[in-house]
Image (cartoon, rainbow, N blue to C red; front, side, top):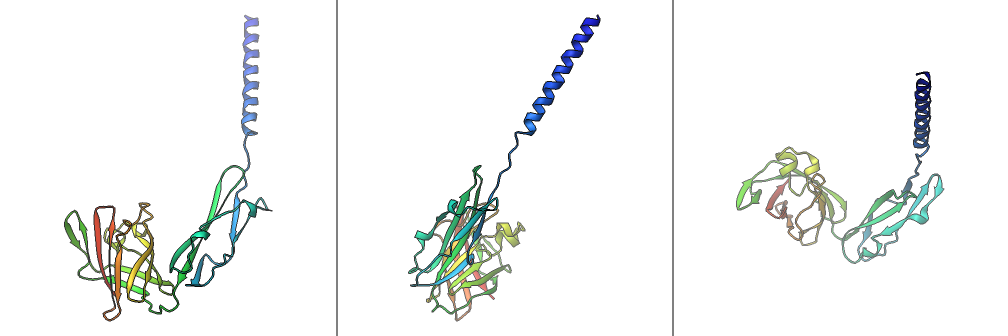
Length: 237
């Protein structure tokens, strides 16, 4: 009986020793990763007069206190057309030794300095504003849309839905369709970019059309969304 007891005690000791060794192995298996820190040179939003030459300020990078600029991959520069007004995006990205990515973006606004009209301000939806969905129209009015000048003829828009989801439905600003539009000399409005962060989507491509009437100080546009609805917006200050 004594021998059996001693054998059990020896077995338990060996199991305990093995478990401790396994725990040590697990603790020493952890690794420390260093992330790439990107430092974009110049401004994140750059204005370039149409017809001029754009020179990018570039970006630098460090990782664990050492220079890592050689890791940067720059995309979007080839797409910049300084003869065509609009917004262009330059992206700087890099990956660390463990495959973790980092990126920063610069917006290049090619603008027409001769367009001096400024439509900045808080605009309000008027009678005649409605959503068309599956043949049924739902009018709405009294909601606000903020438009701010970003560059000559280029403006940020707080919500291309003009308050439908953000204010009327109470979903909050994540469900506003934010973006930029361009005002041409003849009053035509062109949507340059847009997106709904809450749903990760955007207006139906090619469905936006709009205009600014300087005489009545009225903005009107229409845009399709989700393949099944169209918004008809009329705005006044």
